[in-house]
Length: 544
Ligand code: PEP
Ligand code: MG
Image (cartoon, rainbow, N blue to C red; front, side, top):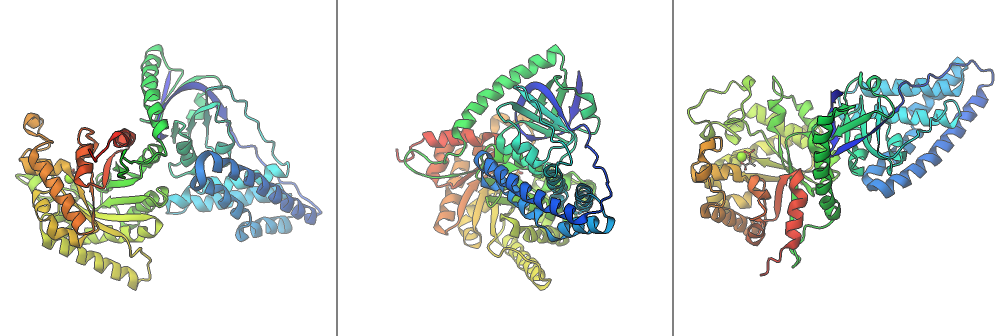
């Protein structure tokens, strides 16, 4: 048995047989030609053919994975007409007097290398697209043989990398998983795998393709990014059980995907997902969450040995916003301190860190860190439907000061001619009893509240959330908490703001009905819980 680790980009467990593809790229020969006009004509004809194929693929993708995901193939069609790309091919044919296949191959590689060197992760991932297009044109000229993949039932496609069009034309009735040695979670291949709901793990490393042969037994664990090639009996048994459980869950999932979160009497509620990094977007989309209700941005700071700079943050936020394609994404600003510590921040030791310099308190006392994050957020705001949320608000003045800093950041961006979305919603976490009690004062200042029941419970019941000995005292259904939630939601409503719950209690299905009756508009839960909440909502009648 051999084990590999990569990044799971689509959750699920598959046990299948390996179909290994594209061990090496067939080289394109450079052939000198006399008649360059003929080569230019071959290039033009091949482009026409490629365009017709892409149109067909686009229509197939449209049927199978929806408009947003199919969009990449209309971009491919546009790329066929890209001026720089075409000029490069024509100039290589004309000046070097070579065959069109060679000119396309060299141009494709040059463009791919240019994309690979870009700072922006999204642009870097485009190298696969430009290679895909070049390959297609070459195929259309008959310069490279198209390898028809023989696919058996339950095939796990194992490849160096897969292009988006290779992914979309695969026979999905036979493919039960993807594993690629390379690839990024931003690649359209990953996006397509997710929308097809096929377990996929990418980036398992260079030695993977050499270590697996056609027909090998293979386990793909898309949850944990694990791959087992020729697993032993014990591993197989464990994963067979996991697969049974997974299938059961998916049956429920399938029947609820695409359905509304609406009660029997017609009350609608948003069910969003909580994430800690851009890598979880796959799960969010796969579980059909209506948006992201809490992106805990502090993980960006915790996974590094130094402050993430504005550009690094911008890229992550942009990726998340673009991947969510217009659905709401609530990004919470840095909530560090208490149980989340980063050495480079050099925070002083505190007697009671949960009551210490954390969340908005830290941001207001270190405005430069705060402003850097806000600049990154506002810059990213034009790429989707962003809402910015501030943690640990206790006083009105903290919110006033925070809003002043937002105004300052926006005016600085404007001065530099940098675009941002003026309609970006602003909200706060309600996670201190103080904030809940003055929610009537805070509500007119914001667009929304999101109730952080983890901290609200800790501070209301004076129960340290880190202390395992307090379980029996930490009653998350305590009347005081429920009253605070109701009060907050009523004050929001009176002032035209919406209320969400993003703490763990949002996923407690025994309270779903109570929350809806309290007027809560949104529940943000771990992605894996979205459909469970949906099924409960759909069974309720809140008039009764
Ligand atoms: C909360 O306190 O409920 C919350 C969602 O924030 P965190 O768990 O990150 O403190
Ligand atoms: Mg909290």
